[in-house]
Image 1 (cartoon, one colour):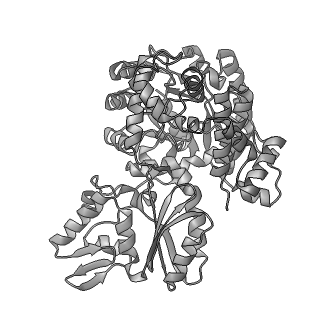
Image 2: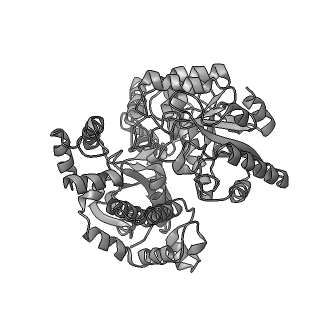
Image 3: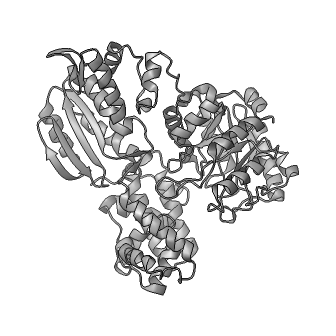
Length: 572
């Protein structure tokens, strides 16, 4: 069976969780977590690296022992060490880690202090008000657990977009290798670049339909075949992702792609428009009575309805059809429009690559500028910089900036907003920096009014520029903290500062609707990766995906500007 990067990362992550539940040495636990993150963010497949005989110890955080374990996983599909740990740990303890806010230390306390080993036992104990008496919990945490469990039971399983990307590309290439295949394309929410994907829809055209179906169900990563017909088939990959394949004729390819890409609301709107012209649109084409008029391309179908072509990311029935009727659709931003990245971290705080390594990787990507924004001291777990350490760091950044000709390196910091709205570093220190990113990393439980006022007070500081990951959400694991976001956006516009669209795939904060809100208010956003290692610089594409879903054009985004124009915009 093929082994993907996510398989190796999952195994290392589970080992780290189980070791932490057991109370293992924190440095040992961290080594597995760091290794999992390294593998997750690799741009190449770890199995291919093993097959080529590459030295895995050259990867950040991978020593000889972990390299040997990667070889074992790639060669056998598993790791004996994980099986050994599982045997001495109640199996459902690991499932409890999937509950937002339930880290290994809390799971350990539940297990050792109350003999709670399953999610059902946890819910029963919380309902009986027995969890609050365990050290580290309390009534509020107990109530939060009950709310989260109820929410989790209602939530459909979905896959983060970047994880789906790991599987879509190889599967499509597998199908394109068949003689006679004309095109293979992913549709559905994946093509609309939603931040999470449910079932994956793939469309193919070609002269030998049965050959395509057979190759699809025979793919080495298939764990279960749900159905297998002459023109369509469904499978479940080993990861649990369901993939539905439809083989269509070339004359219907555009109609099928349109049908299986758009949201339900978008498609209904189009069908109603067609009915007003005595037309019928379905996955096979556009018909008048029984006569098929067209269907080979999406463009010709939109054109028949007198609509401009609508990019897949916009097909949510949020005004895009009306804009297409008026031929006033936005000119959506592309990855090529971005000139730099305005948030990243190095080994000076919690990053995994040095300043020089991050700069070299950014230069290889053709960036004009980057901002180094290591953490301020409040985030102790991130080994943040105090005033003296930051002063030394500024000198190091400026020295490298003078050395490099093509890339400008901005001095910066990600400074914490304290509970009262004060910042974690004094003004005389912040004044020395090119860019100050400010953010919330604590006290998420404040009321909406208090959280909003807290950020407003921070925003009043004349030395801050970009509010990072504005709502604090992490997809499927942490809800946004309560905020009056529109009020904050208008306040930022008045004060001459900006919001970040954090491109990290499990954040994508702002979401698409919030990006649209910023655009309508007139507030520019910065698309930044929040990268903590070289391989995460590629995450910028997910920020662009989100920006496109939010109707953003190049002029709406801060870091599409050349340096001189950007510097003027940052001058409050």
